[in-house]
Image 1 (cartoon, rainbow, N blue to C red):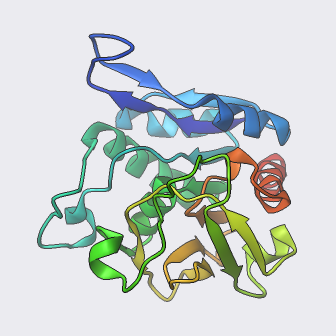
Image 2: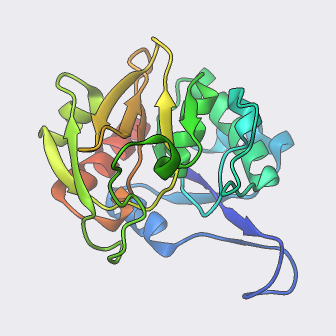
Length: 233
């Protein structure tokens, strides 16, 4: 049973009233890997109850950002968009899952949330902080590669994928800036942007900046398969 926090909107489009949503391919990728997706609404007071029901936590991405105040930034960049209710819940459920040593996979914004939970900081807007950056918000479809990533040897990500580089898609304007010594950076982009993190003291705690649910390469499928296998142990 793989819990996935939903995305949310205040209203408009699908419904004039507030609504939850999630791209189908998150659920399809989990099911293809052998898991059963369970979608989680945003109630921090129920986080421990949800954790009692699931075997692994997948924190998905979304078109919003983690509040810079949560990682000690003095100012909020003008591009930052908040979804405080979603973030409050994801903080609670991710902290709870990590304390239980439950398998965790953070995807894109989910990796950024995971990094902040574990003491890391974020780049608030890549073009303002990275020299000659790649197009991390790629202009081509998300179903196609955007750039390569280079994987650090002898990491969980390396063991899972069995390769030292592979193509990924890219849909983000923020990234992990720094992590504490307790975490490992396991992948970087050609421009030096952090693309993956993990907690080596945890059985399976992995964050990736791209979207493996799109199955761009065999490495993407291997990541989902390893995550679900860890949750089934």
